[in-house]
Image (cartoon, rainbow, N blue to C red; front, side, top):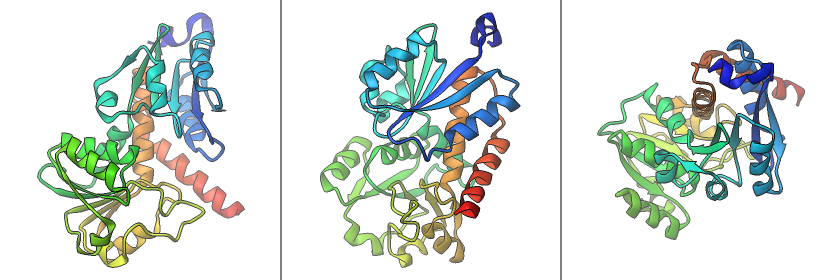
Length: 280
């Protein structure tokens, strides 16, 4: 594997494709991991305007792997040679692996959600309320349903919410009923509560207090208002940082075939947040 990654002594190049990318913590997380894994390489963020051109560059520049973020996770699927079964079922790709000039697409978001949840609770036969109807919602639904959980989708977009509910065999409810929602675990898959609107909350506080487990896919800030409210009420909370690190670790497994230093990856992400807070 090492020989395949470093032909002729050349460094392995990994990349982030997105727009925007300036606030991403993936570079510091992945570059720390590469050093700790003893690999010669660099993870570089690219602000992408031309996705097709960027994907062509993966082959031309022998880029080993790519993280794909907003807004390209769906569009990139049509530009790749192969899509794995999980990514195809979810309908988006966040990871590209250049396997000898064959570009393979994967989705590690669902794996990050699964890992984060299983670190705190059982999924099988538990009931989940998912807030949202976007790509992260799809990944969360896939993780929950694949592990035998039961889900209810709550979204402002009724058309998308109903379509998701039909596809995954679950129920949809409007946000107007959120005060009466109940279940074992609440998962926010929207961007509500993300910096700079860090004090926003996706459901009424009384709703957040009614769950034993609460997960927020937002990882900036590491503890959102939703998680603070839930924790104060005695819930077990699951930060978006857990999901972010776990999906990144899965990317490294795909790109390198090696086990990444997950604890150190989490530590560097939390340290980066502390530094940003202190600076400003």
